Length: 456
Image 1 (cartoon, rainbow, N blue to C red):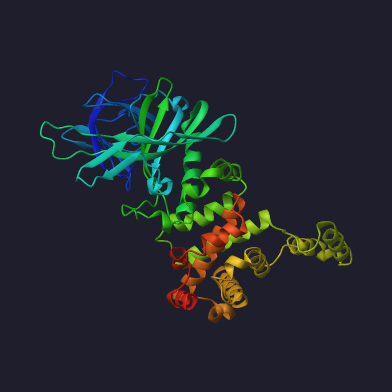
Image 2: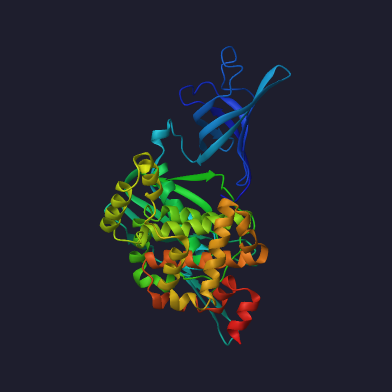
């Protein structure tokens, strides 16, 4: 997924296998996938002025590999020396199989290697020893696959692949490379779109665990008969500079939860739909490092409001009592104002922002107090900033945070969002205290001044 490559070959539409066109497929994970053809799939008599969308294009590389391109849109057509030259942007590349139509793009299992997955799992099959005699002994045995049953249809796997050792006629060195993969395995073949959902859910889980954005590095699908199909598509907001973290820099690792990994990952998957607004807003700031501070702030704040509304008490007054109070108020109003008043009172029983932030801070009080030294001021600053950036009320301009102050508030809000998500997947308050007591974690959420105060 993070490699740049070109494939020369012949390309055709599934219903016209005899009409092959020569061209080059160019893939760059940070750019559009481009198919450049010496010809066109357009009917030049009828479609000359149309740029068409093609669901499936089949191809075969000069090396004989079968290729399927999914969702291709013609972006340019021109003529050179009388020959049509066409360019198509393509959504997904499948190397290793021909699919005749979209509905046939199905797999039993998909394996993904994510950035920092090897470090997060931190399981290897190496046994290396240095003998007093100077003899070095290196042994390797591939670790067993770890299988987690999510439900009757779905398993999540942690598996290990191996490259090497390489053998040469003059042996000066050898190399054994182990790579860790997450497997998504269904009891029967499922469409690629069903896998995409879980690829993203697992990606978010690992990003939360690692404490930094995680991207797929490689994806391979397997059909019946163990046929491997490599999958490539453009990664939105991907970066070519992936920071490799050590396990002690992460919020938690696989080894921290190995005895209850099934319980935690099942919680994450089962609650994915419930927590979807929270996750999308929170991880949106993780994956897009170029987002303006103001947008990061509003996204994280909205994530916390959404969490409070979905998980915690979203009524200031018990619903029956509020409905009775609202009815009496509306009944006492003049007829011409009843509809207007009813609309104004519709959401008046929901807690205001300060109350939502206070509730979340209190829920994680023992952890939060290590990071937010003055909770009242923090909540006021966050609320004033949200109200100003939402309504741009000039009266709040001087009360709203900006620059470094805004950045530090964002870090605290991200901390609160993480605590909420970790709680939902099964971490106790005691475990959260232990996680966030690590110096490496504290550095992420405290300014230099606060960190110095905390360590003196």
